[in-house]
Image 1: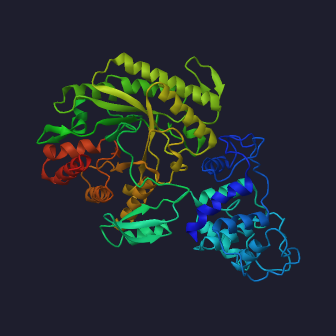
Image 2: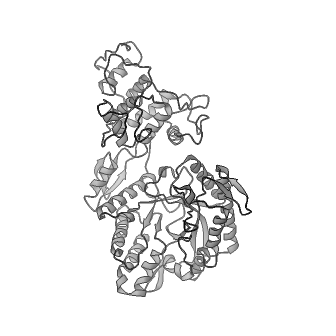
Length: 571
């Protein structure tokens, strides 16, 4: 029955619309809670607005409208269905056969009346979706207003189990509340926020299909040669491939931290095992072609990222300027990267992306003259605009011949609220007007990752965060499968990850995890695609130099470095 869902969505055009889909509606502002979902459905021509430019987010859907919409779209046979015997629905009424069919299919509870013009309630919508699309309940309810004895209990929990709804709060579902167009858009877009079907493959051969991502991954873990892939449908086409090298002009990128969190003074020698693959202390081939320079902090307690505690990021113009100056100082990344490339015999030029800190969203900004302005959407963009222009001026003034500024890196790892979404879009447009790219690296639980292209990013590099898993190797593999699958689903790149480690008891543990990144990466055909790499502050340097410096106790470092080179070069 799930395969028929696209027909349901397509039929909404007839039931709810009279004009072409609008890019924006007069009654759906940027901060509307369902804006993303409404935009998704209208862009897909699933639901449309009214002739007057409104969407009508608060307009209710009636029970009869829902029935006619779903029955016709699913093309169910409405003939010879049992009579529902409703007092308020006669065989001569429009929609009678559809109502009889819906009741026969179990979408509605039987009773003496149907109330065809009554608004559809949330519990009724839950039952319609759960029964029509065979959604199953996998958990217990925490909703205080949904009794386990309710005939809708399992249907409501089926929607929760499939991430279609989480209720108004953790304890409130509002089962008797009517469903409006905005809520309906959210229900349906959440169904399509992920594939309906997943396929497990051995090489290019299909082995088994699943409705659940989790079940597909569990099956893939039963053998070391299985991969999991999204299956496209008539509403969403999933690329089932990673980001190519043309979009952000990155083949192999590496993250270089240079904020307060890394007090290192950089020199040209440091970058040699990054720019080139070093064998027997000699550069023999190119390695990383792109360097992503980012600073997480500006003081012991001050963060350039979005923080749960808003006081953690209180960065003003002075802090942003401090970071900019640090990047271009004599011991900073850019001058020394340029010098290292100029001396390298195998790779004379590299690309660089410079990070844009996250502009705080509360309080006041203090400019370099000491003037205070309230933090607003406009003043946040003004800070970003100033920073981009000043950074580009500094880069141009440096006259770097061996480093090219390809673009900027959005430091924050998630795009949560509507204001941030608009800020990212405006920042991307600003950079494109200057011939530059904008990229970011969302973490494994990042909000709105699937919209990365809509925000204007040229590249997104998903973190699986498997290197943080502390339990078992199987759990590491599960996390990696999930990350690679998400990247395939939304066409992003991958952020390979290994943390800093020198000589300690957990060396082999971290290298074993890194080996799994590479092994599964090859299985998913990641080599040759656009990747970046998190390596703490200097792990690549350690992998490439410690064996020759400190002897056989670091032999596993050299092997990991060699394996990384072979992976990045697709050898």
